[in-house]
Amino acid sequence: MVTKLRKFIKSLSKYMLAYDIVMAILSISVIFGLVIETKLELTDFELTVIDCFVNLAWAIFCIDYMVRLIIAKNRLLFIRKNIIDLIAIISFGTLFQGSRAIKIIRLLYIFKAFAYLNRIYERIISIIKTNDFDHILWFTLGVIFIGAVSISFVDGLDMGDALWWSFVTTATVGYGDIAPHSIGGRLIAVFLMIIGIGFLSTLTGTISAFFIHHVRANKKVTYKDEEIERVIDKLNNFDALSTDDLNQMFSVLKALKENT
Image 1 (cartoon, rainbow, N blue to C red):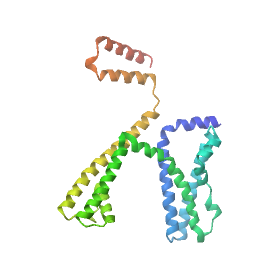
Image 2: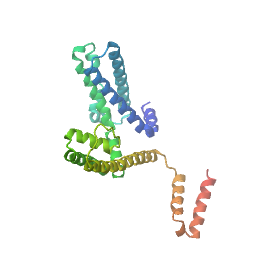
Image 3: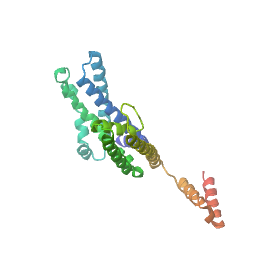
Image 4: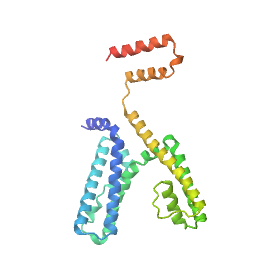
């Protein structure tokens, strides 16, 4: 039974990235719901809706943890490595049910959310390091900070407004709530816009490259695929090929065709 479950989970490995993203969204939603429940005065119906959602999320987290525990080859090692996840699935809601006077304690559910956000941390790091995007990210953040300091001196903005303006301008959002009035401020804005356009283009390309690499890594490569890839590589340097090379490639392709 466990072996079949392991094989089934392994067959779904190409969907693991999408699964982790869904779990991350669910985790963020749990945090958002719990913060609203704790900070705002809600009606009984609204509280009930949030409670149902949190309990549903907790059930999903429990199932996820139990499945991973069952298919783990070394379960004791799995528990030790995923102790945060184990703490996260403890149902604090059951322990404190009906105690609205201390509903702050229900924020302990946030452990669940952060436990699953932690699971996609490595994915995020992988995306950031794709095509050396981490260097571009730090450069852009540095430019945003320098732009904020510059506009604060040129147009006399306080540092909070300057950082907000610099970030919005680099993101090419342009809310318009804060705008430069001097020529120097406008030049700074143009510079930030150019950097922002380049950054967003690179970000899009990096995410695309990561997903393409992920799909290729999970794709089963057959002997036929490898041989065809070799032929394509050789054809890319067509001028350097001899007649014998072409005959050899033809023989390989013919043999592959006959075996299909």
